[in-house]
Every structure is written in C-alpha cells, then in structure tokens.
Length: 192
Image (tube, rainbow, N blue to C red; front, top):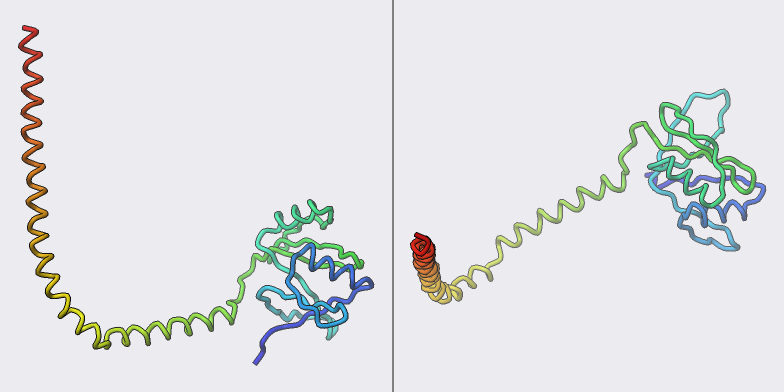
C-alpha cells in the first residue's frame, strides 16, 4: 500500500541546502532534471502528535551517535547546537546554508521494524525449505554410491595400514627413551 515517504524542505537558498545534503551529509540522490535532486533516506518512521493546528509537519534526521555526528560537522567547520537530552533522544539542530534549521537526534525510543527487512526474511527462508527436499529426492546421488563401493574397499585396507604406522612410531619412541635412560646412567656412573 505505502511504498515510502517523500519529505520536502523549503529553503530560501535551495541550491546551497542541496549541496549540504549531498556533500556534507553524503546522502545518495537522483537528478530528476534541471538540477532538482531527490535524496534517498535510510529507513524512516512517522509519528502523530497532538497540536493546536493541522498541516504542521517537522522533519528530523536520526543517527546512531550524536556526539560523532557533531564532531564530524565541526571538522567541516559546520556548527550545531549543543546536544540536549530530551528523554526520547539526544537532539541537536543544524543551521542549513539557506537559513533553515534541521533537527538531528540519536533516538532513545523504541524503533519500528523496517517493513522491507521483515518482509524479506520470510521470503529468504521459504526458498531454502523448498530446495532442501529437492536435494533429498535426487535419484542421481543414489546411483553414485554404487560406483564409490569399489573405492571404499580400497580405502578400508588403507585405514588398516594407517594404525600400523601409528604403532611403529610408538615402538620407536620406547627405545629412544631407553637410550636416554642409559645415557643418563652413564654420566652418573662416571661421576661415582
């Protein structure tokens, strides 16, 4: 039913604000003609608050780390307001080049699940269930073990030979210990 949201920022200097969104915030975009850029946003949410008037809308961007966000802006010589703990999140505002203010916050409230991700998970698991039975019913794999029966006979004697080789080093290790004991006794007898 709803496939996305389109937010509009009105600005007295739209070119400068578009450059800010593209170059400073690094938002991906498409040019729909004549330099009109539409920017992609990460998963979003909408809330309805009680108010005195209708048709009043606000836009806030969200980030994972507000302190890092502010430091990144400061490194680019862009000022942001001091961070305020609002309870629901840590909020700062950025003055856009066109003069408008844009709120950015690190949410402390619960976030809704991204419908695209939650819808994609069942689709991924359903094909995996369908492909597993197809592998079990493949008759070609049943014919292949008959050919492998002869190599299995060859493998059996090789397995018997392997333990014999393991036993031989154990026997060699025992005489080496005996020699070491004899060597240790000789210097002791030479001292007495």
